[in-house]
Each structure stands twice: as structure tokens, then as C-alpha cells.
Image (tube, rainbow, N blue to C red; front, side, top):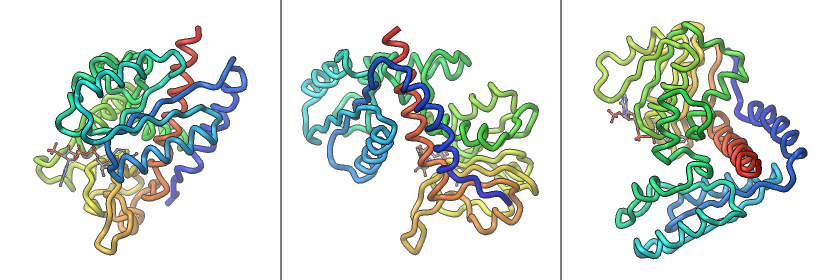
Length: 279
Ligand code: NAP
């Protein structure tokens, strides 16, 4: 069994990004937009900021009170959206319920939408049009598979989870690489049987250690997107790592797997956004 570490994927990506950055006229700029003080948002924002700093990408953080009015937030967001010094925008979601998140997704400039929340970019993922931006986590899974030289053509890929943020777009990206894709969800019958046919098995369900060796075919590639806390309060994935490792050929751990690759993909997309805008 080979442990596929996010750090190794990130270091290969970083080398390529640094090369691109040295050829650019100025440092690209990411704006992070957060409303309120949710722990998950703060830690993702911190991780994104740290990654941008390491790469030499500028990062501006915009933080608004949780009780900001919808009108005020729309106005502030539009200002960031129109700011020519900002190349990419990362909106921490979900927004508080009283804010019109759907409207924000509609008005974000698709050319700055580096986490793929605009319907324009989402459609491009489903159409297979590579001119748009990808959802960072789904793209991070593809980076892991590419780093590990996993050939997807004709392979059975099973994705467990069908959210619009991870599972669905990821399934389309796998399909675009000519994998035969099965999407599972909470109503799937006999999940273990479906999963155990997978050459490539990816889980994004958010259920601590739910998938075991019973779900894994011998020699399968296993990618764990889930970020959960187990009964002992420790971070863990959707797979029981020890059990799944007994059968997997390649497996990503949690922590230390896909998570860190996500912010590297964000960096990559900010660089692409700046290149597109400065052309
Ligand atoms: P989500 O919106 O809650 O979606 C979860 C999906 O899993 C749903 O499609 C749900 O099915 C399915 N599911 C839930 N329980 C299931 C079960 N027992 N059997 C089969 N399917 C089941 O979650 P998400 O936003 O996609 O995130 C999923 C996980 O990925 C979370 O742990 C999250 O923390 C993690 N995540 C990681 C990153 C990263 O950077 N690594 C980024 C984003 C998210 P239904 O549709 O039928 O309800």
C-alpha cells in the first residue's frame, strides 16, 4: 500500500506555480470574503492565506459582521468584485441565512470566480469546457490522481457523495477523463457492494470512518475527501484508514491528504485568473 500524501502533490504543484509566477508582470491578488466568525471559515481562510503567502500571491481579507444587512453586503461585495487589483475571489460559504447567497453567485465576475460558484463556471464543468474555473476540492482530487499517475480511461470510478461543491463536479471531471462513473448517495442500496467494484473509489460524505475494507476492491485507488472528527476528538476521513489500507493500492490519509491540495489548486486558479485578466 502506498500512502499518497497531499504534501508531495502540493510540492510538485508549487514548483510549477513558482515557475509561472516568475514570468508574470506582478503578483496576482486573491480576495477572501468572510461573514461572521465561524471556526471552519476562519481555518480555511487561514490556510488559503498561508498558501498564497508561501507562493508569493497577494491576499486581501475582507471580514464582515454576521449581522451585516443584505444591501450593505451586496454593495461591499460588488466593490470587491469590481476592484481591478483583485484577480480572484474566495467567498467563505455558506453565508448567514439572511444574505442572498444565490444572488452573490450570480453576480460574481466569472473571470474572478476561482472557487467555481458562478453558474457560468459550474455549467462549464458539466459541459467539459476547460476555459472556466473548477471547484477547488474536486480539482484537488484530480491533481492527486494525476500526481499518482492513475490512468482513468475505462476504469470504474465510484464517487460517494453528490453535493454540488464536491461529488457532482468531481464525477464530471472523472467522466471527462473517460472513467466509467457511478455516483452514490445516502439512498444508495448496498453501498459496500457498489464501492467494491471500483478501481478508483472516492468518498466525500462527511461520515467518520464509515467506509472499511468491505468497501474496497483489492488494488483500488482510494481518495478520502471527508474531514470529520472521530469519537476521540481526532480528525479523520470517511474511511477507516487502517482497514481500507489493507486492500488499497494507493490511499490518501486524513489529515495530510486532499485538504492541503485544495489551497494549492486555489493558488493555481488565482494565477490563471490574473493571466486571463492581464492579457
Ligand atoms: P454535503 O453537502 O453534506 O454532502 C454529503 C453527501 O454525502 C450527500 O450527497 C449525501 O447524500 C452523502 N451521504 C451522506 N451520508 C451518506 C451515507 N451514509 N451513505 C452514502 N452517502 C451519504 O457535504 P460536502 O460539502 O460535499 O462535504 C463532504 C465532506 O467533504 C465533508 O466531510 C467535508 O468536510 C469534506 N470537504 C473537504 C474538503 C477538502 O478540502 N478536503 C472540502 C470540502 C468538503 P444525499 O445527497 O443523499 O444527502
